[in-house]
Length: 216
Image (cartoon, rainbow, N blue to C red; front, side, top):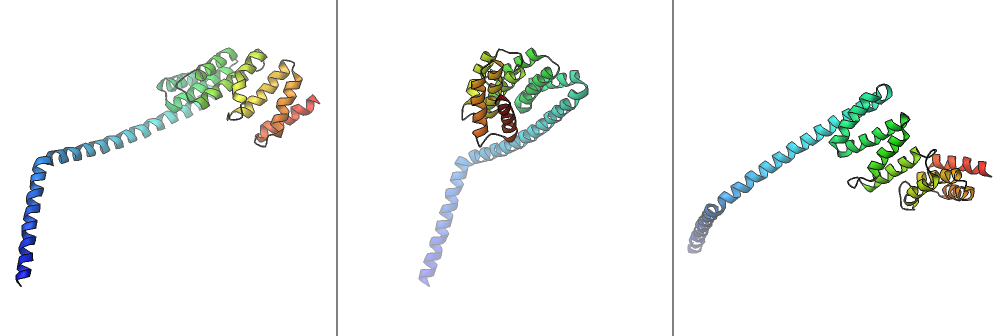
């Protein structure tokens, strides 16, 4: 019985000490805990608000880009204005808008303007290398029939590397440029490489085989 009373007293004392300890801790650090909690709530609310704004903004830009694509068929001037606004806003749709601006120039017959627009993307240090390379490729393709074959081939050379994602299109363009420059042997070499490569897309392979067949 005495042991039970002893144990009970010890538990009560221990509990009182704990409560007193926690009270001191709260008195000392309570304001920090409350402040941290408030900051956490504000941060979460801010993040959720940013997410909502970001989603809404992207949806609006997507709608504007879709509108520009629709306008490009019948109202190219209106499409150009819409795309210009998107390009100024930047971001993913801004980059798409810049590509579409160049495509509209090419479609209108302004080859020089289209090539310059693509080259501006290719030289933009803030653009991912993947899209810089694509812009270079499109710039060359825009001038395929009018530009200097040797100069264009030099621009394409880095894109024909084995680790470049645009290599198949670049190799096809390089073969066409070789033919324009009168280097039939080089054209055959490039076409044979495309045909032999198991990774060559079917459309490019079909065109390579047709062109290679015409060269004998």
